[in-house]
Length: 137
Image 1 (cartoon, rainbow, N blue to C red):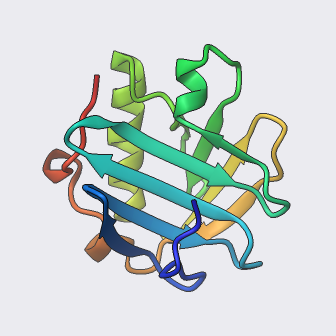
Image 2 (cartoon, rainbow, N blue to C red):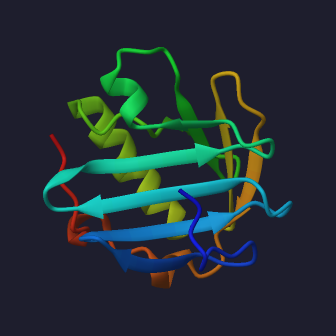
């Protein structure tokens, strides 16, 4: 689900097929962190590691044990691919707040290679959590 507008130097957003998309590439150019918001579908998260393996929020729906964790500026670790539970949405809310104020985010996942992403322009590209055009369970 790589976007042609993705950048490894800053966050970017776009819109397609009813979905607002937010994304950034890792410094190596092959890893990606992607969020999709659509008022008719659940909030979507996808992390793709440097060798092309990925975990998404749909993996939670499949009852798999695949997880994606994020740490902003060496702060708390958040599980970020569970938009279907109270605790998952709470994690996303806190994570989103840190995304908009941090400098970098470290992403890791089950059986995936970790990546560090910049948070340059995240504060201007990512709207406040309560203004997201996303559906949460």
